[in-house]
Amino acid sequence: MLVSDRPSTAVFTDPESPEIDQTQYDTGHGPCLDAFRTGRICVVPSTKQDNPWPEFSAACLAHGILSTLSLPLAVGEMPLGAMNLYAPDEFAYDGAQTTALLFSTQASIVLANAQAYWDARSLGEPLSESIASRAVIEQAKGIIMGSMRCGADEAFDFLVKQSQHTNTKLRNVAQDIVDDVAGHR
Image (cartoon, rainbow, N blue to C red; front, top):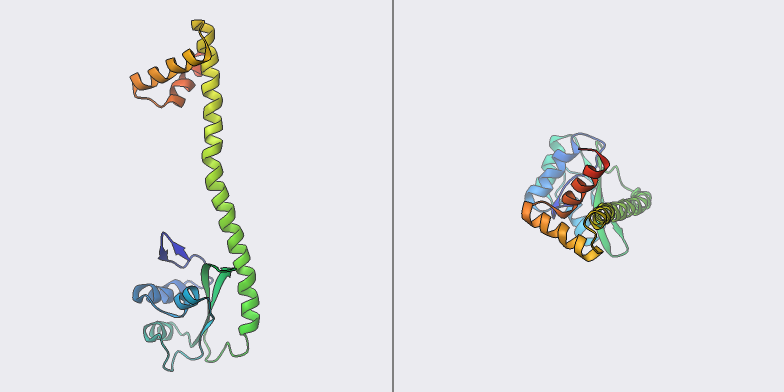
């Protein structure tokens, strides 16, 4: 997956996988990166044989990996990442590509849903905070209106001036007023 516009191994089942993957990230090419970029399956039937990714194959051999299968993770035309399958046997993925593609399709949907969840959560948190801030500001305005016998606009102006005078966030000024009246100070 791309994290901050850099490739990264986000999930793995073998602790050596990120070390192998790092070779791709360091060189800028490899089957996983190609699967991500092109949206096509990339197979290395044997890391002992010549292929377009010699540095990657050398890293695989150093970790006892003799064949790999890299599958794109995408929903529609939107690439989300890629998935590597590593095997200690040569030609381990002959005939397994169709089944692996079914799995990667399902994994893509899960990944897209996870991204949608985190995107929605990232949008929702500031809104929730804003709503909570607004409630405190309205409470403080009510307190000011009652004590100073003024209107809502004047009470808000008072809060703004106090915020500027003390170089304190408006929400914090409002919270201090509410806490003071509620006896929390």
